View 1: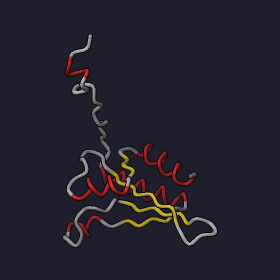
View 2 (view 1 turned 120 degrees about the vertical axis):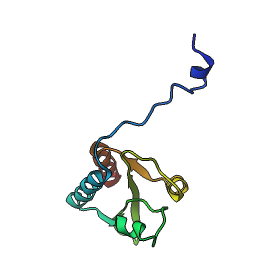
View 3 (view 1 turned 30 degrees about the horizontal axis):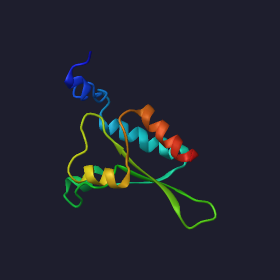
View 4 (view 1 turned 135 degrees about the vertical axis):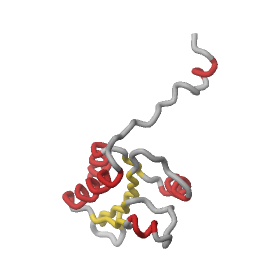
Length: 118
């Protein structure tokens, strides 16, 4: 018989996978993989945030693929996180814009390939 805490899911929630890869290394991998796959993307450098010109609410990469025969593009909002969680304006923006959050190179490759194939 399960305890009330376990029935309510208090102790059965999965904890995030511990990743030892630095976020900068993951971001560099994602940038290189997107370039290798020929996916156009916008990357706002970290220094823009550090100078205070922008404050959250924008993912690490905004990836776009033109839709053939149309003036529109499909878009992937991709955020790289290793040890930290979303913070500040990122939380609401991630929810509203349906960001893909990756923590490992394998997850990044899977999401990017799924985006290309869609």
